Length: 270
Ligand SMILES: C[S@@+](CC[C@H](N)C(=O)[O-])C[C@H]1O[C@@H](n2cnc3c(N)ncnc32)[C@H](O)[C@@H]1O
Image: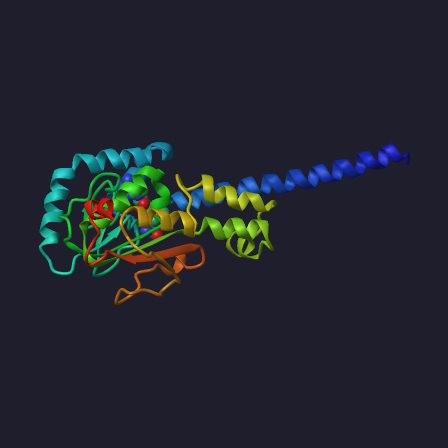
């Protein structure tokens, strides 16, 4: 065999291997995405219907439009719920209803109040004891997430707690640039490690990514002093609302609304 033929043979083999790896990644990705879209036992009837009637790419918009149509009814519902003592809001609940919390999401999830969280919350200022959201902020454009955090601050009563959880993009990127063990633990078997990072940034209709610095910035810019990163289950709430299946991938932060909030007038006087 001539040297050129040998090199060609080796190249063909490496090309076939790369093609096989990429093709099996595409097949596995499509399978994962299909399983994510499949009807789940926690899906409300309206969501099951939506999944059957509306093509995937229009579903998010469809739910926002439908939620807008029932806005007045939901505002009345929120007013009734707000009359209860110790109001606790679970925003962007999805299928993860939590007992003891007022579960809020778009129409189609098992909610207590259906609400577009990119619009002002239907609760009075200073009326809420605690707010929890987990894997919600990354679905909103940064500006809408910022407005939502300010709304959280507004509706919390002094001393009220905000706990937020987001996918930990900072940790994933550090792992990518480091020994890759966390990345491999979370997203095993990708034929190239960067594909796992891409999935976090581009899949699941994600719009914004967070690390401790970015999430902390949103907390502080909304008025919460000293937001702190907290471990899964570690909280000043009487019970941690964290979802077990989110444990490995999630960055949690928590802060309290100050008992004597600083007014902007006070700041300009300093
Ligand atoms: C990844 S799911 C998280 C659900 C649940 N918190 C969990 O951790 O499994 C993101 C949720 O945010 C909700 N969401 C996204 N944009 C929203 C909006 N503008 N208003 C209300 N909910 C929204 C979606 O409907 C979805 O249920």
